[in-house]
Amino acid sequence: MEQINEEMQMIAVEKVLEEMQEAEKNLMKWNAYWWESYDNIVVPTEYLYDYLDLNDVRECVKFFGDIDIYNLRTDRPLGIPLKRFISNPVYNQDICTIKWTGIETNNSSRKIIFNNTGEITLEKHSKKRKQKKQSKSIEYDANYNVLSDDFSINITIIDMLIPRCFARYKYGEMSINLKDGLLTCRYNDIEIIQDLNTGVKIVRISKKYDRRDKENNASVVFEAVLNADDSLEMGAVAINTHKGNGKVNGTYRFDVSRKKGIRANFYSRKGIKIDLTTNPMLLGTANTLLLPSPNSENSSDIIVSNFANSTQNAIAKNLSEKVISFDNSDFNMEAVKQAKSNIIEMLKCIKGELPLCGLVERIDNCLLLLDSKKQEKIEGTAKTLKLN
Image (cartoon, rainbow, N blue to C red):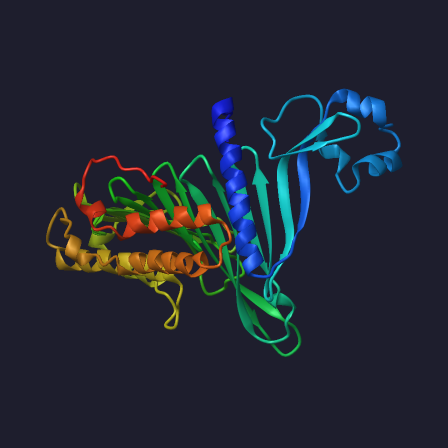
């Protein structure tokens, strides 16, 4: 967070203290308990010189107890403190960061960190990994600043699979980040960036080549721009085939746009370009590389495969044309919408277990904007999230 003036610092501290009070009420309702500790502690320089021999750790422990002496600062102020201790005889200890750790409930453990800058972070870790039966758990970390409407949440979904001899885990990753009117959602290797002012979305997928996967020798980079109504404005996919040593052997590329129509080309390792619209065999090979397995539930595989299939079908319908024109009805973006829907549903799922009122309020405001039909109809009107 960039440097803020004294007035904003006062507002930040006031709002953080309010968040702490509300969080305490919520945790008490859960019958939860926690440890409170401190960081970023400011003390006068003479306090150290008068009362401590810094070379004697025992003396430091004697005077500061569980406080880490390396977090003591005398060189510069850290702003208005969240808490102040009056030490004997008259010296102050200014506490700028307060940590609540070991917030225990039946199935999870949480940690909350409050900073006088306005930053608040929350972490949740599951206890289910210690269990010996098959289970699913959700872990996350969240961050926001009381001076901003932005927030971010990273979610990990853990499936515990129990084979005969040992436990193993299957992980799914989701995240949602709101910053300066841009909402970024990630679902494993899918990234969706939405401008909340215009409704326009950018979809990105990147799948790296894996030498261990003997059945697939391709890496894929996909990017598309969707309008507010989720119709395709433009898109491109590049499929690189790889040798056993990892070097690129050739590249298939599909480009689709309203302005330039549809193009499909193959680029050999030596730089030779082949128009795939005149070579159905190579075109079919490219599509085969992107086919997901029959039982695949991988959303990114489905999105890229649908795009390649749609491109190939559009080319097949218009092979006689010199320039293959773009027809949006050829492209189905349902898989993209489903991926984003999965993220939003997970966000709604965890919202009810968040002890921080400010975080819940920011999520609610974000969901209201996403659900609003007006957002798709208003063009060029600057709108920002406002907290009550």
